[in-house]
Image 1 (spheres, rainbow, N blue to C red):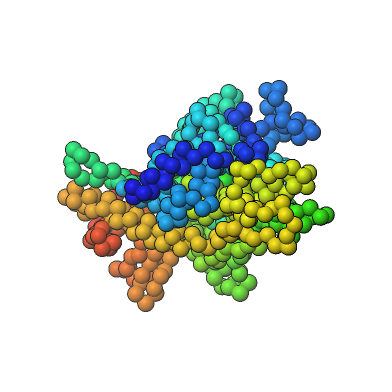
Image 2: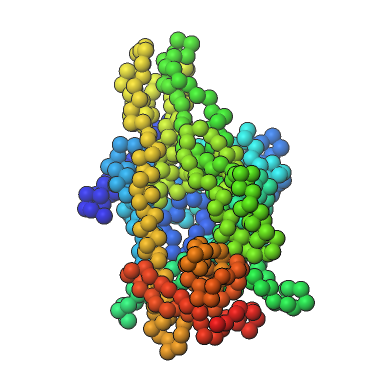
Length: 551
């Protein structure tokens, strides 16, 4: 970061201006037991979750009972409190657009003094948040009338890692002393079932292809980078079957020993963030919109809320019946990864619109992305828009009651020129309208950088294996599908690397789902080049258990 950007961060940290506190709409939720669940190395923590027990009349139950009625809270870091519209610190974020998470480094959208400091939902600290509370119906759907959105003050009780949460659930602590974790898992499970029932990707593609996540850290002793690889999946895949657990001890031919199954902690976080995105969309549609500046002779601020809804049309199977039949055939033949690869061709692009609409991949009626304001400028823009709406709503209520507007408020806080708010006027000028498309360019530009960096380090990981070995370095792979029939070019997945790649068959036509042992023919990380050829023998973690053909 430039010195001027660091200075902007330091000035923001000492800025006591809090429009939500001035208006009295920042709700004190410090009595909630708030959990954050992240990776062990995460410093910029932007979301926390909690469970509130309710009485039958919807009021909070303070008796200590676990009760049958729960309100689930998602608390997102109130970045707008520190980088409000028009601020120098916001300009810093706008120049970057997004945080870049690369294998060897992280380039934050905000200077670390803020992203890992005042903005982050650190444990045992009072922190500003934008909180959403919601109740679920028995089928896992949202009760729209229960949604609460409010600026808040929270106190994080537990900063947990994914592994710690899984351990607490495995040992039973997540159902006893920390019963809220078990309650959130139950809610997340209901939500997943609800979305799958509405046709989400998790239902259409139950066994997604995993992805190798590579990290690189500099080793001062060796003067080199140590490269490690962890294979992850989005849902429901991985080592979910053992030899002992399979029928009559037979080995499952689709067992993937390199990829761990999705954990309960990941399910909780994923579903709670998706829940937050759907709930905000439903909440927006229930809000009264006021597009004039007069109500029964009382001066009012126009108050409308436009949000960037992410929409994805459903696949068009009818006009592509032949392809759909092939996809169904792969699934019926239990060819899991080839089925997942083939299914991708049916997914339509996600589009952003100010009009609510369904998101097929998520199985939702509507969805707004807002859970990562520390890391993504578009999420921060949503925060700013929602908070401006809530402030204007409060100010309009004060005007109706004839109360004076706090002098500390600025036009930027509300998005309208309030210098003449007490005067009757035919127009009310908007100030600093939010353009949700303004940050998309930087986010799109970051994706190829992240992809290229990931490929470099994956290939570097392979190069190190080749350099250390006196024998051929080989990996077990599965044929996903044909890319070019004339050239016998196929898409393959390399289990041990969590890598999808292209392979020119040396033995002609290959069937989807066929297992191959391939050796590294050449690898050049800087050029992002990697080629495979048939190995002279089979080997690997479970070569004796799988019937992978050797050349």
